[in-house]
Every structure is written in C-alpha cells, then in structure tokens.
Image (cartoon, rainbow, N blue to C red; front, side):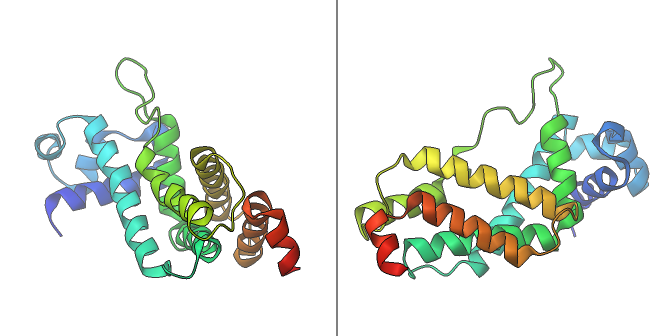
Length: 197
C-alpha cells in the first residue's frame, strides 16, 4: 500500500476511534509514526486530506455498486438494485460509513464554510439516468422531475445507510424492501401499478 493510502486509512481509523471533533493531522502522523511533514507532503492541508478520505470512500462504494447492480433488467429493477447495493455497502462498512458522515457533516474550511457544502451532481446522475430511461424508453414511470426524485432517493438512502451503520436497523432486507416500495409507489404509473397487483 502506498503512503497516500496509508495516510487516508489512518485518517479514517482515527475518525472511527476518536470522532471527527478530535481529529488532527498531527494525530494521523503519530498513528503512522511519521513526522507531520510526511503527511503535509502528500496532503498540504487538513482539508485536502479530508476531501481525499471522502472521495476514497465514495470510489470504493462506486466499485461495490458496479459489482452488485445488474444493468439491463429495466428501470424499476435497476433502481431496486441501486437501493439494495447502497444499503448492503453500509452494512459491510459500518464503521467507515459513520466516520465519513461525521467528516462530511462537521468539516469546515478556515473561513468556517462547510467543506462539503453544496452537492456533487455526479452522485445523482445514475439515478437521473434510471428515471429518464423509465420515463422516456420503457414508459413505466409517471412524469416527475428527474433531479428532485434522484435527490429524494439519495436522501432516503443516506439516512438509512447511517441508521444501518449505527445498528439502529437490524433487518436490512426489510429496510430495502420498504424503501423499494416507497419509490415504486412514488414513481410507477398508476395504471402500471394496478396491472401488477
């Protein structure tokens, strides 16, 4: 493992152990038995280290999704796969998920601005693509704003992922099915729903 990844892993472990409020670059250096200069050589600021930690987590999640989402089964099934894969990733990476949420919610720049303010539209794009396909090609979805629905799905997933990671939800399969039903009710054409009942 290269030094950058060692630093990122140590930062995550420290956040898990101590919480973000007690996180510092100096503590990362101590954990790795290196000077603070070694850390700042790879990550010139605390902010750049934290951004890399969060990016690394989401890249790992994306790789997990690629393995577990079956494309080509139709929009409804693809959305259900997406929901299931996200919740199962949180179940497998409980400690990391809690640490990442802690970092995202509490990181500030030196000016006091949330480090992860705004949103990354790339996070919503897979969902937007699913909804466009379901509306325009398969015609199984009613008309709705792709972005609003994508943000709604993502918000519910993120909330449940944290609850799963904190062991507030034990039955992940039940949570998956309930969320799938919520968004099936919210998106599928009424006529189509009646045909399936």
